[in-house]
Image (cartoon, rainbow, N blue to C red):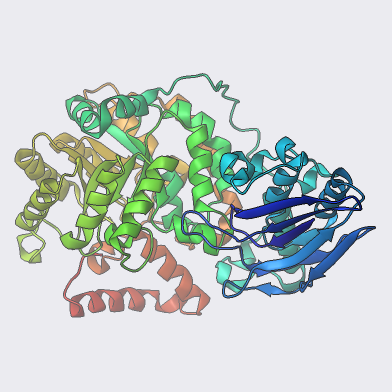
Length: 578
């Protein structure tokens, strides 16, 4: 019996197989080639552990060793085991033992799949055909294997890999300290290991049989068009909570871990079930999860979707750039949106930082094709209430809005990334958009850099906005979004009442106060609002990043000059949207 162990991404398929018997011994030759679905590739990495198993009737042929780097450019086979025995069951038992006892760490292998094959009742009879794998697709489901390791901790390659990565990370941390590329301020690191967030939120029990409720129930039953109609007919002011995405992106360099969000997810599902959406994915969260947090952004989305079934999930999509920093082929963007919607995204906020409609068009069409709710966002800059501000006047935004609505957007968003939207400007712009598009949902997003965010959102609501963005109090203000609690309190008892209770969000606010303390090393150091944003127009996330970087470079005393140079560069480049 011959089995070839190789690297894999998630699935492998043996394509040819033959079983033979003789009086003296039994052999099985399995010629396996790797076939990868979803355009993925064999796993790559460095072998951290490479230990062979051996024994009577076992031959090993391999080239691996600890420290070997597996590249995507060559044959990914690591080792070939040959088992011999007096009969087929004995040969089979020896091969199973070999595969279970060998230790290969650092990359995922096809061992679970091979064990699935070897333990299948039909295969154990020794009578199979070349269509065996095609006839039994469950063999490729390595997460539901029918075999057991001596240690249960060894049976799941993902768990083993996660544990090993954690140990190596802590070892490197102990010897070399925090990597500078992480962006943490070492002077703010705490030596306390107490977790002050565990016992804050009460348990929220929900059984698997509970039906989807809240606003998402309406979206799923009525579809995007029906949800848009419901929001327009609703007289209450609806809220999008940005705590899980833009709030920590603006305040904490997007370093929020999935575990800290998952912990409060069930309580959030109950407290914000009347929210328009939770903005929780896209933007910088995708690449930061992989580059700095060593997490999978898709796993974050799917874990949170499982915990929050009642609130629509919203993501930020950069048009043809998706969640990257370059234009991608059309089919890539379409497939990305399709998978995002399948994994849990309900609402796609599509934008382009320069309001380039051709770039947004692809994102809008891809999001619509996925079955999601499409929100087309206009990047706001300048001041529509000041006639002297030039090209970014009321007519500019009305013309842009018409183009986006004509592309099929279910809602229009004003995306004020720098916090420049004053209450007067909000009234003018939202009022004009409402008059021009009476049946279209209007959603307003801002940053509270200058401290006027709550006032601007209230003015927008009075002028006809259906939805505004906010963040939990502990994650609001400064370069983040306006305070959720302040908005709830200011419209309470009026026609615009959000339907949310301060008592319901109180425990969550306390939770985020404690969580934010854990991320103190990633704070920019900004202690107050900055009204000079109306002069330099630096977007919220850029402002905190630039402030932190200037301090790292020893330029703290030159911060005013840096902001002045930013404003000058903006004029040189033609006064572009930020």
